[in-house]
Length: 136
Image 1 (cartoon, rainbow, N blue to C red):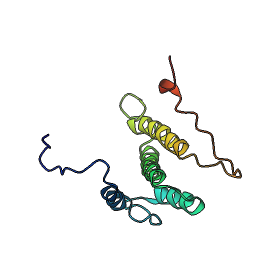
Image 2 (cartoon, one colour):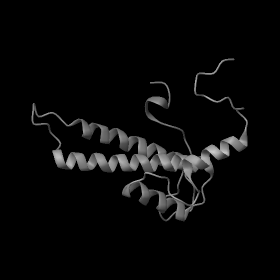
Image 3 (cartoon, rainbow, N blue to C red):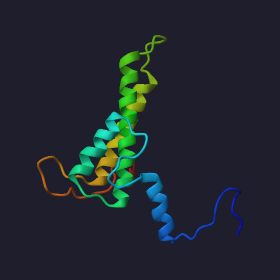
């Protein structure tokens, strides 16, 4: 089979390559991923200091931390511009995107299955709800 230019062929089950690639993306397990802002770093440190996470959970946590940073930036944009546009009085697009990013953040945190504050029980996974959860 042919591979596109620039792609390297690797075996799909090459565990050493996978670990090296994940190490390059995630850095060390104890260190925070590069590029996180204040909100993302806070979420990362709060969860990693409290819980021992597997590699796949760290990937979810990194995405949640980046989404948290996006939400913080969108909140700042909405606070500086207001919630309505000057032309036509419509809701600013940043507010709509903030709502969507908060849904994504909630789903990522649910997928991590972090216990609620004050509880040692791990939440039971019940799958996604909404338009993906069943027949409409």
